[in-house]
Image (cartoon, rainbow, N blue to C red):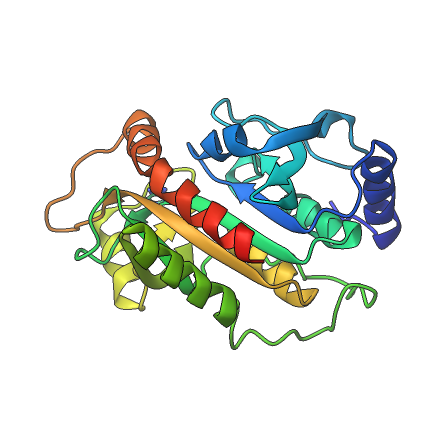
Length: 273
Ligand code: HPA
């Protein structure tokens, strides 16, 4: 489903009219990583269902609302619940909130997700800062007529994650004594986890982690010149030679156990923006 620039402006205007004024930082909270919301001094919440053109989140483990408030001295707009390709949404729907954030004035975008570790030196329960990505999704949010108001037809992707923000994140990790690996994230459509042969393949093409989100949002952020960073919580170790079945509950449990560290890093980064 295509979403026009006019529709994006309508979504933004609705959010603005609800009292959300010039958020500085956008935050997307990944699977099992909603705990950061407790640290936000909430000024306004809006259900996705109430926002014109917004899709409604279907996965039970994701709550679908925008949360506006203050975090570490900055005004933030956080997505509690994001949209995934496996839920059946179009790439335009998945990325609409990021485009709307930019229209609202957001200056930096912080993304989190849960991912499997294909780099076996990275243990489950640790964090990985995305240094680059590989798009293995079958569609791209920029397909179709370019929306010139947002960005160029052929956006550069030589540095998809903002270098300065990543350096701040690495420094924050040092100061907080939180293990923060760096690596390449590959995005797959899901919803099934990967086979042993697929993990082997994903590793062989240069990935350190694999997950079912983030890359569409990063592509549109780059298209619009919106600086972004992303951190994966590594929830399972994807060793093709010793692969154990993994349940959603295990993924959620590991994500929850690593959440504290992630929150510390996000708060420290937001304070410095
Ligand atoms: N594969 C894809 N997505 C994931 C994984 C995985 O192993 N773990 C958490 N999200």
